[in-house]
Length: 166
Length: 422
Image (cartoon, rainbow over all chains, first blue to last red; front, side, top):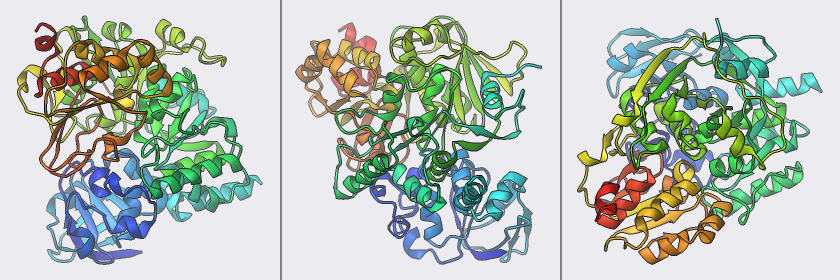
């Protein structure tokens, strides 16, 4: 599967409080969360983001709170994929678990400019910058993680297991 | 080649003789935790997974603490969902207002974690329990749901970084200062995906409360877990709290570490982390004089009885400065009651501070002390991110309870020494 969209650039250490501030965590409704996505980093993001757009960030993206509301808000806002120099551990896990594709690529994170059109092949982890014509590689996901993604996320992965053990 | 304690716990829980960093394992969990923000999402995911029951109702803890006592209707609905889930699946460890406390103060206090345990919690500060020699890590809600359904979860075995603190602790220096100093040295992603193991004479002399504070903030360096070798202090702490049997397992002498960092504790002064990252740690004497509007003393980081005593020691017979709001939040009902019995509540109220029922409240800008634009707070909490405690133009300075209480008295960031010698 290939996803394509405009790049939204962010800096280093974008924490989950910036991705979805705690003042909105009295709900877990994805649509409500999406309306405030990235609000404390860029208050205009939720209004301007288009379906398929891609977040491109620096190091340690998603640090801080374990709130799964962060990748849920990003996905519900229509973002198709997140590319960063590096991810915080819990955010990485949560994204895989809910089926939000994320890729670590220092070269893509450094080279992609705000507004560039980006195309990502999810299976091969090849990132193409349509605007500049450059290509980047990302760290391939491990077999274990690919298995969870192949099952459509952790819920389906566990459903298979629950049925098998029953 | 030996193993670190983190590796030993992961190996035993996945039925292996040994594991190496980088190995993927499926491990059995001893305790699964969720709160009023993360559990509702996990409950929905659990129902979607189609499991007929939870793996073990006795090994699940549900603690409504973030927006409780319920701050609004939506929060009340979230807690109702937890309450109904607990009833449906016969989960006894649902802690209602009156019994509840801040989760990471409450669970150790109730003896729910022992050395060698493997704990996961849908809260990033679940790493706190490493203070007792457990492997304990924060996960998201879907992971929590999977753990409740199956009693196991996948893990990548982390490399371990060892931090050795030699020397003796200076006056007013505690666990908070050591961990802020450490994060200041290695940065907010200095231990990303890794285990942080704390050792050395200064650590042996540190109380369990102080160790809980340090392990609590391992996540602020990006770590998967923080861990301490269980010792006599651990055994003493657990006495009367649990009847479970446990072993005092430690890292092997020939265990392999990612890196070893040695710090001389006698050179560490009380620390303050400047906005907007915990890695911006400085000795308090370098940042004195910043005017403040609010002081928070509490949280899963510093809401324990020792923290309360330290704050009271400075506030006793003194007054909170005009124009400063000082909010003290004991972490659990038992700590609150202890504060009452020891006269600490009287000290706080006479000083002009308010004392709140246990809640995470202001730490995450939820309620009970949210900041307006331009306001500055000294806080014993764990995160000083942009907008964490309220308006995006507010500022948080992280410190231990002594610096926070001294700052409340002076009205600006202050060293405990300048107040107590006054």
